[in-house]
Amino acid sequence: MARRNGDGTWGKEKINGTEYTYLQKMYGYKQNGSPNLKRFRGKNKHGETARQEILRKKEKYEKSNGFIPDKKIQKQTLSEYIDWYMVEYKEIRDDSRHKDENVSEKTYDGYMDLLIYIKKNDIGNIQIGSFNSETYMTFQNYVDKLLEKLARSTVDKLLIVMNMAISQGVADGNIPINPLERVYLPKENDEKVKVKKKKIQYLKYEDREKLKEIAFATYDGEKYKGGQIGERIYGNNAIAILIIMYTGMRVGEFTGTEVCSIDLYNRKELFVEHQIVSIKSRSKSTSLKYELQKKGLKSEKGYRTIPLLDYTIELIEYFFKQFPYKKEHDLIFLNENGNPMNGSNLNRTLKSMLKRANCSVQDCSMHALRHSFGSIIKDNAEAIGENVDILTISRLLGHANIQTTANIYLHKSEKNMRKAVNYLEKSDLSKDKIKELSKNKIADIKEKVKLLGKDYTAYAKIEPFKESMIITDYYIQPKENTFPMSLENILSKFVEQSM
Image (tube, rainbow, N blue to C red; front, side, top):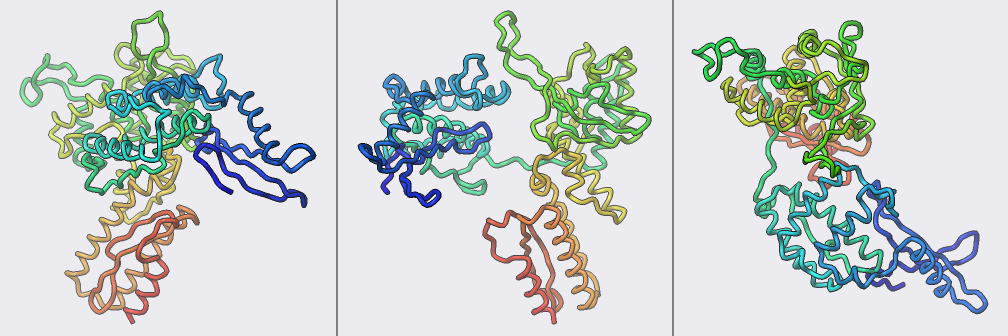
C-alpha cells in the first residue's frame, strides 16, 4: 500500500488464519535509541471498514499519549522546536510525560552544548512546518559547512540529536518530512572533512620514565627553575597522572574511587565501580556553574578489577598518608584542598610535565594517556616474546565493545608485520621458512578474529616475496563491510602461489 511522509506504513498480515489490515507508525525513539514503533490493526466489520477502525485506534492512542499536531509547534523555528523537544522529552523532570526517554544530566548537557551550532546558523531560523522534499539540500549544505571547522565526530553527534528531535516531530504530525533522511555525512578520509581525526599519542618507555622523574622533582635553581628551591614542582595532580598511566582508568573512574574499592596489601587490586561526573549546576541557590556527582558506570563492562603493581601501590599510599582519616566510602584521590580532582586541571598538568621533561610527545591528553597503559602491556609482553590478547586489554580498560580496543591497538601488529617484511628482505631465509612464517601469521590473525567473535572477519594485503607470498598488512572489520579479499581467499591464494 501507499505510504505518505509521517503517515506510517500500511499493509496486510494474517494472525491465526484471519487477515488484518495494519498501519505501522513510528513515534520517536526509545531511551535505548531504537525506534518506538506502534502497529494498529483492523478488519472489515459491520458498519466500519478496516481503515476506519485503524484510524480510530490511532487517534485514541495519539490523544492519550500526547501525539496531537500542534499549530503553535508547527510555527516554531528549528531552534525553538529543538529547545522545546529537549525540555519535553529529554530533561529529567518530576512532571515529565516521557520519563522513559529522559537522559542523564551529563548527556543532556552534552546535547545542549551541541545545539549552539544550530542557534548560530541560519538553519535554526527555518520554520519546521515548512519542511519539504527540497529542504534536505539546505541541511546538506549546512553539514558541508560544519565539516570545514568541526571534527566529523562532532557533526555526527549533532546530527543524531537533530534527527531524534525531527523524527519525533514527524511522528507527532508537527513536521511534514524529515530532511535528514537524505543528508549524507562524508567519511573521515573524504576531502570535505577538513578537521582530521587526531591520532592517539602513545608515550614511549623513555617518555614514561621522564614523567615518573618530573612528578616528584623539586626546584633546584639549575635544572628546574621558576620556584622556591626544594619545593615540589607538581603536586597531587602529577601523582594522579602516574596512577592513571599504570591502571588505565578513565579520569572520572579515578576520581570516583572509594576507600572500600581498594585492597592494597592482600589481593593488591582496585575495583572500578563509580565515577565522578561534572554537570551544569541546576541549583538557583549557588553561583557555581558546575557541580560534581558520583554515579555508576555507563556499561556493565566498565565494572572491573585492575591488578596493582607494587609501584602503583606506593603511588596510592601517597594519598592515604596525606589524608589518613578516611571512612569506607570516602574518595581517595583528592587535590591539596581535599576536593575531587578536575579533568581539565589534570590535562593542563600533564601537558606542562611533558614539556618540562622534554618528552618526545608534547601534546597528550589524559584520555590518550590511559591508552598508553594498554601500549605498555603490549610492548613489554612482545619484548620478551609473550603475547597479551586484545580481549584481556579490553577488559582491563573497561571498553564496552572489544572492537574499540581492536581499533586502537591492532595497528601495532600491522607495524610489527611491516618490520618483519623489512627484516626478511635482508635475510637468507628459505622459501619454505618464509611460507611457514606467513602461515603462522595467518593463524595469529585468525585467533584475533576468534576473540572478536563470529560477526567479524579479517582482510589482509599480500605481496610477492622470493617466489612466495608474504602478508604485509591486515585489518579486522564487521562482516557486513565489503573488502577486496577475505581471509579464506588469502589462504587459498597463498597456497596456490607459493607451491
